[in-house]
Length: 373
Image (cartoon, rainbow, N blue to C red; front, side, top):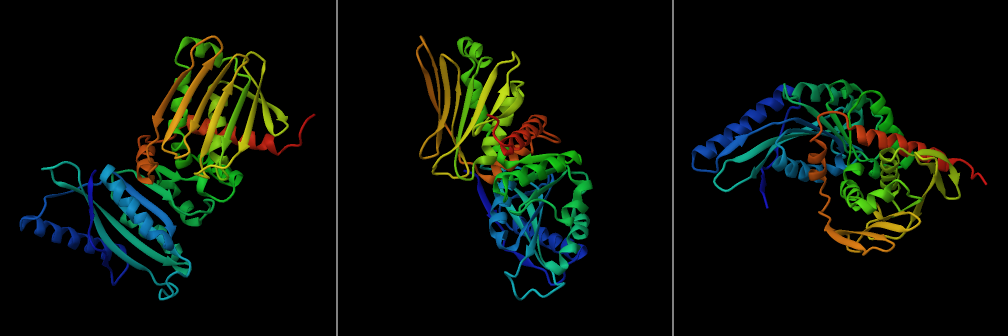
């Protein structure tokens, strides 16, 4: 496991770009002096600017995530937190800020790789100053990644003012209130040419991999094009994941939405035959996750099921007349820092996610229509 250390926060008496830069210079000068005095060797690194927009109540959580992300991809983090009354001592128009460093020992005998974090807390009346402060503190010539850490739908003027400099915007549509509103907000941003990284999509990677691998063998691949029914079971807050997975299946297999049918949706395959897509809400240990996916034909059943403990997926292919094939794969902990790091593998737009998102929105519209008997 990578060792991660974080320096104590250095609170600023003055909050402006020049004061913050001076404090950062002092922070690194102190670290260098400690190194020369026989302390651990340090290497300051910055692969990208990481701007976090969040609530003041979540600063500790976000700082822990930034520290873990620094171990994976060193960065300059700018955490801008909106105070909603958690700190009564912060009066209107007053900002509070501090700086700190996160260092990770990647390998024994090597220098510690360090990134820096600037945290700024602003009350409502001073939140309008955040875009200007952020812009003045960005490291030049490296990408700008913004993480929307609020639970509500993106729409803050702060994000709008920063939109032109965003290389990638990280969202988590599964954590936002309202499935439809969250996915529509993501689609609106994409239409404005913002490259979206959705952590809800990242959590589906293992599911998509296991579904695809079920059809590696020729007998299974032959049945991929004759699927008749798809059943996706999800937890109480797992509708976003279920819709995105269904959207991915429909776009990859070139299915067209036909009509709502009962509690599901009828789609048309490329050969003109129907596929019935159904969503079932079930009780799961992880309420925001999928529970299982079943893909059925007249003579076969392909399933991926999450274990009760949530630590592995079981994939099973059962074809009449053939020996069932079953395998269990470890499902790694879905650490937020690791999910963000995975999203940063793409420099710009993710066309597969964007296609799945469009289809998920179409599925939602169809499900909202009256049942056609």
